[in-house]
Amino acid sequence: MRNSQEIQDIQKCLELIETRLNWGPSQEWTGYDFEKLSVEIQAVTSVILSVTTLKRLWGKLTYTSMPTGTTLNTLAQFAGFKDWREFKHQIRLDQSPAAGFGVPPLNVPLKPIRTKKTYWLTALLLMLIAGCALFLFQGKTTAPVDTKAYQFSSNKIKTEGVPNSVIFNYDAAAAGTNAVFIAQSWDLRRKVAVPQQGHVYSTLYYQPGYYRAKLLVGNQIVKEHDLMISSGGWVAMIAKDGGAPLYFKKDEVLKNKVAAVNQAILSKYNVPLQPSLPALHFFNVRDMGGIRNDRFIFETTLKSDFHQGSAACQRVEVLILCKNDVINIPLSSSGCVGDLSLYAAGTKITSKSADMSKFGCDLDQWVKLRVESQNGKIRFFINGREAYSLHATPLPTAIVGVEYRFNGTGAIKDTRFLKDRQVINF
Image (cartoon, rainbow, N blue to C red; front, side, top):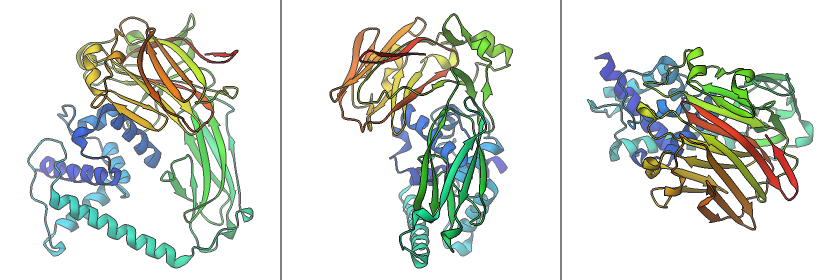
C-alpha cells in the first residue's frame, strides 16, 4: 500500500517537473534531453541525478525498486518544494475533500501519465503562484538599482583542480528591504538567498568549468564576474546521485599519453558495470589562448569497448565547453543511431528528424572525431568522413575545454585544438 501511494506521489512530482520544463511530452524526450535535465537539476539543487536514474523514473528503462530518499528529495526541490516530505504534505492537501478535487489512483508502472485535467489544473496553479509572486515583488519596488553601491568578488581555495571551494565576498547593505541572492553560474535559478548584512558566502564546485557568478538584488543583477574552475589537466570521475563524485587518481588514468578508465580500475573501486552503467566523465578545462567557437578545429580519438548487457549502444558524448555556449557531439554503436541528439550554436538536431547514421561507429576500436567551425559553418567528421554539417553563426565566445561522457569504460588520446598556426595539445 505504501509503495502504491508513493508511486502516485512520484508520478505527480514528475508531472509538475514536466510542466515546469515545458519541453513537450516526455515520451518524445531523447537521451540529450535527459542529459540536459540532469544538468538543470544539478544547477538548481546542487545534486547530481544520473541520466540512467532519470530515464528509469520517466519509464524509459526498467525500474524494479523505489528511488532513494536523496533522489526523492532532489526531485521535490527541483519541483519547487523544500523536500519530499513537504511535497507529499501538499499533495495530501490537494487531494483532500476540502480541496475540491481529487486525483484517482494510478496503478501503473513508474511512468508519468498526463491527463488534460491534471495538466490544466497544474498549469493554472503555477500561473496563480507566479502571478502572486510577481504582484508582491512589483509592490515593493521596480526602481533601478545603483550598481556602484554594491561589491562582489570571489576567491578559489585552489588555483586548479576539483573539488574546489569558492569564497564569495559581497556588500549588499544598500539593498534596503529587497532580497539578496548569489547565483553561482549562468543559470539564475541556481541562486541562493544570502543575508543582506552579511559579507561572506562559501560553496563547493565538484566539476571543472566556466561559471558566471552573479550578485542579485531582487531580480536585478548588480554585479557579476567570470569564475573559472580549471581542471589541472585530465580529471576522470564517476558522477553519483547526490554527494561528491568518485575521482580517480591521475597516475591510474594517464598512461602513455592515453587517458583511460577500464574494467580493472572500476573493479578496484568496487564500481559495478551491471545492472546500471556508471556515468564516467573526463574533463580538461584550461586557458585556451583565445580560441573561439566561431573559428577552430578540434580533433580527438576515443573508444568505449565495453558493450555487454545495458551497454550495447556504447553511447558517448563529446562536449566542447565554451564560456557562453556548448557543442555536444553524440556517438554510438551503429544500431543505436535512432536516438541521438547533436547540439551546436543554439541548434538542436535529433535523429527523429535528421539522418544521423554516420555518428554510428565501432567504438570497440579507436574512433577519430574532428570538428571544424569557420565561415558560418560547422562540420563534423567521424573517421575522416563527414557525418553532418550545419550553417550556423554562433555568438563568438571563448572555448575553455572539453568534457567526455561515457557509459561504463572509456579512453581518450590525441586531443587538440587548432586555429591558424596555433595548436593546443591536451
